[in-house]
Length: 253
Ligand code: 3PY
Image: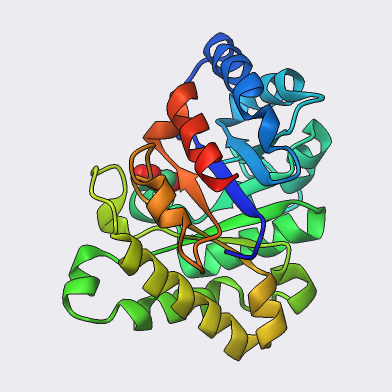
């Protein structure tokens, strides 16, 4: 693609602090050559954020969180605000991952609120969208994706959407080892860009980074990333292995 690729690891609920430090120390030298060419991000559990910020200091690895609450502060036991993340040195945040939608009651409305709160605080959101297997089989993938894009980005300005990363993650490909074919990924990523062009304008749509996610790994990354509208990847399991994550980063260099 013509846009600078963004490769982000989504560690999910994995790694203690010592393990996080060890993994990042292993990744750091491997991906150093990607500086200026590929944006490399590690999205880690809240408990690992400070360790990740310290371990990656001075390197080309940026740190992201895996969720953020939409209120600024207050009586929201167990939640973490965007300001708290910014103060730690966090730059990105994953919002609306299908696991959050599936297991934690996340809706397009809360995804939209979190996205706006993140942007207002200066965080770059990685907003996840994707259809269920059942929806793909019923041939309503485009309807589902258009609806998610419209609702999740409701009231987000053109200027802000350019700071937003969209991750297309077909739900049937998440943690299942099943990957969308490169053509399927390209088709939906192109559709997302066309939807953005309708909501905003063509130039804005061209400026947005659209990642593919869903069992992207060292073996399939190069083909997926060769597609015009696939500007990077949100990487699950393969981001927990330094060599595999690096292979994906190098495929984007
Ligand atoms: C996966 O690769 O399974 C993911 O969910 C990435 O976010």
